[in-house]
Image (cartoon, rainbow over all chains, first blue to last red):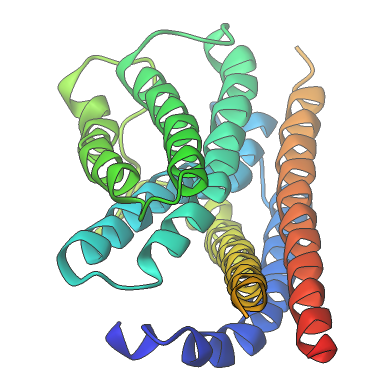
Length: 238
Length: 43
């Protein structure tokens, strides 16, 4: 982690990693989506709508993983004063918000033919909506703090406190009697038939790599803007 | 109820939002790195 504390060293790794993540992520996501739309059988209960799973589940994972990333960046900013931590947090937030939005919208679309409703104020749906609003709050707070020349510590604390929502989202289907189905995939196995499950790892890793590429591009943009600002400040002082 | 409009709408939202995020990130990176390069060349 600290090996990447030097922005120049980080950029030497980030430049090739951006292209590779984009290319491999695009291929995996496309293969998973085409496979999920054309090669898998319909579910015995949900029919064709089960295919929404191949975009909904990766989006849900990335919405939660994004905030876990923000919390990890916040911790390394507060405890170790990692110089890239605030940059990483600000880069992750819009990406996490986008995928949380995708999760909410695709979930709502999936809910209409399956549950007969677009929305229900149950534990899982509501805690995901709270996560979306947390992202919006973090983005606004981090931008305001940066504009005032702050180090991003308030946004970092907000990122850490907001992480309390992650276990709530995860366990919501166990704690409350929800309309949302319980956990069907875990480390120990899956209750989904293999003939339906196989495209999911492809879209899962594909969208994860695309998410990583977007974060790397945003971090590179912010580091380049910082270089420009530093150079302009130096020339103004001379 | 025909399920396909729901499936297509979900995929369209996922694709458009992901493409939008990637394009916006790429444009921002490209502009910022070009500005940094042009300032370095001016020195």
